[in-house]
Length: 328
Image (cartoon, rainbow, N blue to C red; front, side, top):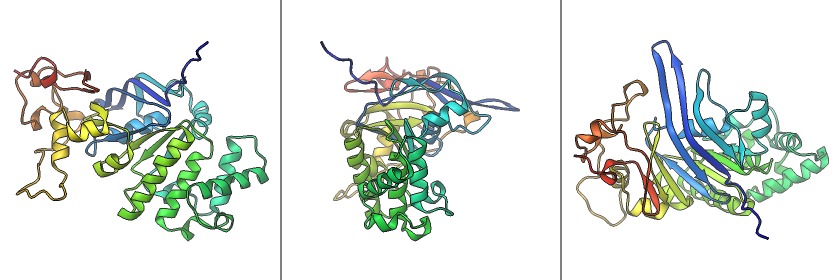
């Protein structure tokens, strides 16, 4: 008799996030749908303000008030979490979903050793006693590549370099053995050589732990090296999703093509890199129709009136009228 396959690490369906203000309701995310399988890394890319980090915060249940999930569903390893109370989400964070943020110093308490913080986290999410938790903490530090883990476990965050602090934060994210990890710009504050080490480590641990990873970044190089699939966001919507090699080599949405064209290629001699004119619209100034239409070189009359939905296209999906009836 066949057994049912495990639920994806993350399923987001029709997610919308609103911020009520005195001047009306601002929609930060609109109808976002994503799936991350266990052991898979999904890269989420786009300009600042596209909604990448907002999606991660919504999944973690850490939206700043008065922000709220207005519609849609979030399921982590099959468990619906968007309708949980703050207290119920406390038990989900760490145990089911871990987080790695951009600046490790904001994730680590400078007053306590990394060992104290790891042991406390492990004990919170398991039935290990203090001695067992310390042994597990040492093993986690070894797993993420901290040399001399038996001694370094008693050191404080300021005694580690930036790259080593980020490894400690990854160990903290793994301490509860979560099925999902939200990594929000985890390499931005690091130099290039350390970035490569961290992305390699993240990819290896993802495979070994069987955890899904949502990798939020603006760096297409990090996506190319680390992710299995990529979702491109613009103005609070997913506009293209597909396998990394397909999206990088054959982008379907004009915005994605602009992003790819703005990356210099080794060995290629060009007069100018591609530039996307204009800027991401403010939440209170998203144009009707396709939100990208004021900046799109291929926009037609339909683009000013019809907002495209994400439609299957080849092995991926794209939200563009060029692939859904034409722009005229």
